Image (cartoon, rainbow, N blue to C red; front, side):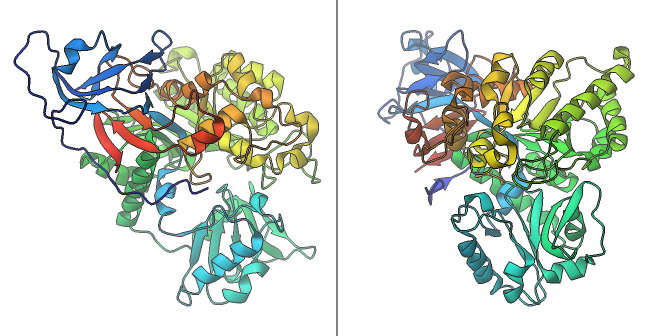
Length: 570
C-alpha cells in the first residue's frame, strides 16, 4: 500500500479570501448581527472530541483560535462576518491529530537516505543496499535505516556483516533496524571502531557473536555508540533541513502536533531557529535525552510562538526492544535463553535527574518495553518521590510517562493507575509485532501485552504515537491499529486479544485530548472548543464510521494549525 503518494501540495499560510460556500465573492452590507471571524468551515462532518458537544456543523476561527463551534442554526451570524468560508464538501474534521511519540529529525532524514521500509524479503533488502552502495564513493559511509526482519517472507533473521561485506569491502556501513535501537554494521565499520572478538559488550548493549566470539555485525543498544562516534559530521544546516522536511511530511499526513521523544540539543537549537523565523509548520513538544538533561536544567523550560515550540521534558532509556530481544523481561524469552537487558540508563545516573525534575517541574518520559524494565522504572519513580519532600517539588501534577510500555502485568497496570502514570503507546507497534511477539512471549504474557483497553478501563490516559521513523508515522495506520488490532491486511494471530482494541471514541481521544493532557496543554488544544487553538485534521473519510480498511485509504484534504492552512491537497 502506497501510504504517501506523490502529492502536489503547498505548505505555509495561504492568503484568505472572502467567499461563500460556492467559492463566489462574498459581499455583505455592514450588519450588527454579523460576527467577525477569519475562517469558517462548514458542510462537513465535524468531531470535536468534547463529550458535551461531540459533533458540530460549523466552526469559526479568529486570531488562530476557535471562536465558534455549533449547529447551522446557531451559526447564522457567523457566515456574514467570515473573511473566508471553507466548504468541506462532505469531508471530516477532527481536532488536530497529535503524534505523541515521534523523532522529527529522523522523519526528515528518511527522505534523504536509503529507506528500507516495506521490503518483503531479506534478499530484496540486501539487493537494495547493494544498489545504493554502488553509488557511494570508496571510503565513504553507506547509511540508511528501516530494515525489519519480521516482515520478510524468505528468512526472518537479523542482517549480518556477511550479507553486506561482498559489496562494501572498502565502504563502512551503518544501518539501524527499524526500531532504532539495534543496527547492522559491516566488517569495515567493525574494524574502524576497533571491535573484535575480544571486545567486551558495553553496559546496556550487546555485540551479537558467532560461536567463536567473532561479532556478526548485528549490534544492540549502547553498542551502537561506538559507531555513531565515528560517523561523518552533520552540519547544522543539514539538521535544520531534516527538521523542516520532517514537518512537511507530518502535515501532509494530517499531524498538527508531535511530541519529540528524545531531541538532541543540536536539533533543539535548529528547531528554535525555525521557530524564530516563523518556519514552524506544526507544534512540537520536546523531550531532550537524559544525556542532555543538563542542558534543560541550565536553560530551563521554554515555550515560544504560541506553543509551536515547547521544551519541558527528559527522555530516559531503560531497555531495548522486543523484536531484537533486548526488552527486559521478568522471565526468559520463550524463544531464547535470556531475559533481555536493562541499564541503558543506570539507577545511579537516573536518580539525580529525577530529583532535579521534581524540583523544577520537568516531565519524565521513560522508554520501557519489557515487564521487568517497567516494574523497576516504577520502583525508581516512587523511590524518587519518597526521597524528596513534596514541599520541595515545583508541582505535584507530575504526569510522568512510560513510553512504549508494551508488556504490563495486571498488578502493574493497577499500580500505574494509582500513581497517575501516563502510558505512551504506539498502536502500529502491536500490529507489526504480531509477526513475532507470540514466539517471544508465549501465550501467558500475551494476555497482558499491548493492553490498551484494560489500561483505559482503569482510568489511565493512553496517548497514541507512531515512533516514526521506526514506523511509517501515519495517523491512518495508527487509528486503524487502535480500533482493529489487526495487520494491515485485516488478519490477526491466535491469542492476540482483539478485545483489547479501543472504541473509536477512545481512539480519537488517544490522538487528540489525551496527548494534550500528556503535554500539560489540555486547555490549549486537543478538542474543538471555543478558546482553544484552531488545529484541525481534515480527511475525506469519516474514521468514526468507515470500515477499518477504508481508513487506510483515506486522503488528507487539509491540515490547519492555529487557523492557518499548512497543507492543502491540490
